Image (cartoon, rainbow, N blue to C red):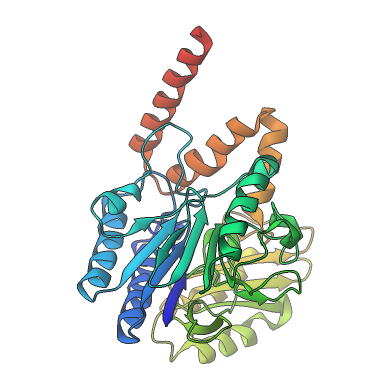
Length: 380
């Protein structure tokens, strides 16, 4: 038996405000669906952050629906949980529920195990770090059910595990139910698999299917897992997707012209125009000269960013350093500034993504609905 483990699709992400980047995300999503169909997987698991924002645009909703429809047409069932990007702070029905109600896919994010073709499936939507202690009993309950199940047991979570990334973690591996044979994870955007003696199966992160804003620009591979559970052990196999190339280069100011020549040669045969970042070291730098050199790449790239690695600060063309877990750092700083995790979650995880996609009308409506909810709470 074979299944696909796909996570962090972030459908609807419009990186750099370009239609090309929005289409890139849809393209790799459809690649994952096509490959799953071609390889005759028995089912597909989506481990959260299906959409980039809780109220995605119509194109994103249709793209997901069409993907699930194609799976169903090929007799492939799918199951999903919600990540933090799918969950609105306002009490509305999450968009992915539509697919459950239409029987395009099965929602399993409430921790209620179900059996499918002899496989036990259980999942939980995103759990905040402060809420983890409340789930100890629920984890214990499903662990007992898993222990008594003779076939494979799959637990689907959208959480950061400390042993993988201590800066973006809400849970430790020792907190997890131990009797599952595969832990289908979402949330962390880098591919990784680890096995622990205290768990019956591997913890696997397929990572995001495309580079997202929080990951910066880097030369990396993206994809998903096809997991073979024909034997006693679950064996994840990495499937690489054809993503748009992204490169980060470093150079000294005096060698910039030579570096631009080298970059041009490297990217000239790319099937898709790449995204390029150039980090320039030096002092007494003339930004006009940099702009002139960078302009030589314009016809070869989708976007090119540059920044100066010195005390000098340039203009808006500078692409600033960002940590790999910028979303978590922004959230932490917002909590400090606003004095409320709830308000910070609204600002960073709901309002900011919409504003960055230039959805002004949607952002205004979100602020209005949030204000109306606040007034009702104050009256009570």
